[in-house]
Image 1 (tube, one colour):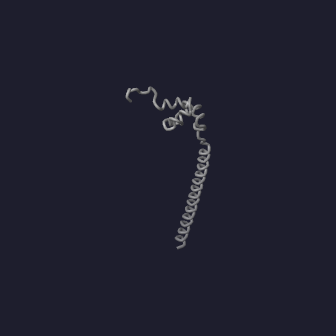
Image 2 (cartoon, rainbow, N blue to C red):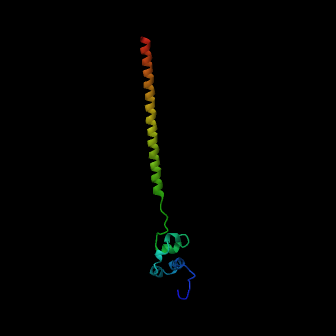
Image 3 (cartoon, rainbow, N blue to C red):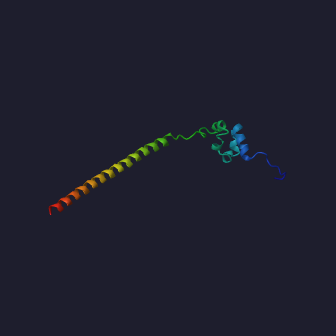
Length: 111
């Protein structure tokens, strides 16, 4: 400016002070665009919650964990079923191969 005066506080610091003391001033200066309320949750949780309730609320991850566990169980079941299917196919294949060998031996012994 003309007098070359610089404020000692940044816009962000001014907005943080207004959040703690004067919500209408906070709104008038458009501080919602200057500060991120989520970032202030750690240092000014009470003031942030008073201005915008539930902003600092932690996301509930229980549903995500339950879904992940259920899908893991289903996935393990599918893998187990696939392994069982492949094992029974192999056992049947070996049984048929052995029977075929015995049949060929018997045929050779007859002639």
